[in-house]
Amino acid sequence: MSSHFREIFRRISALAFQLRNFRKERFECPICGYKGPFKDICPPTGLRKHAQCPSCLALERHRFQYLVLQSVLAGLNVSQMKMLHIAPEECLRSFFSRQFGKYETADLYMEGVDHKVDIQNLPFTDSTYDFVFASHVLEHIPDDRKAIQEIRRILKPNGIAILPVPVVAERTIEYPQPNPYEADHVRAPGFDYFDRYAPWFSKVKKYTSNCLPAKYQLFLYEDRSMWPTTEIPLRPAMQGEKHIDIIPVCYAQSASKQ
Image 1: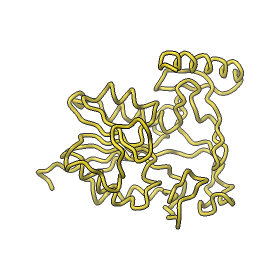
Image 2: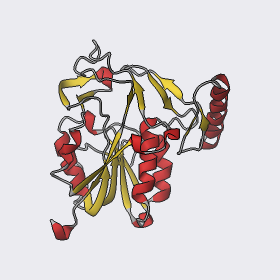
Image 3: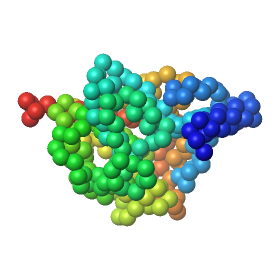
Image 4: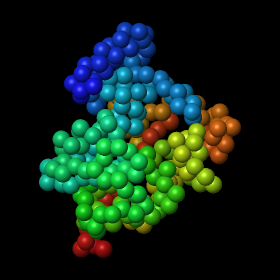
């Protein structure tokens, strides 16, 4: 199916969903401009309400990332910058490819990327990229500290890396092996996880989803009091059914200050 017909199909599907769910709370997707109810989803970790845009299929984190990117990239000469998008999300690929002068994608398993790479041992020379984006990647990586070091190594002086992970615990918990019920996560990142970036970046600015307009629905409506379960035995319970998301924007120190 061509991209044109795929877009038409998505718009028709979104309209049908909107008509079937006209009583649901309405939101707005900043990525595609859709206005109406969002889809509930039910991954193995449990029901998430108001999660997905029915038009472009963006999830809470994608909408949040898009808004933060607008702020981070404002004022930068992006058309002259070289970007690496690791584990590229479909709903953000077109945005990045339009913005950056040179846009490249990478993943270990995904088809249709420019580079098949292991993030723990990247094949690029030092100071290759101005901007690296790797969302919900590091929770899958056994040696995540080596991966963070590698991302910093390939960044140019004054480069930027955006490296979000799902915050699903108060403090980070390491797993003895990947959990297939959590998309093979090897850890449950906590609020302390972003401390791991400090040795490699001169500044880490954290954006929280409760600081942006509610109309975009950037929270995770998820009952975490049911954890741990048989499928996810190491995630501790968290109180509440509405949880914030966090996006860390990591700034590389300039060469003159190293």
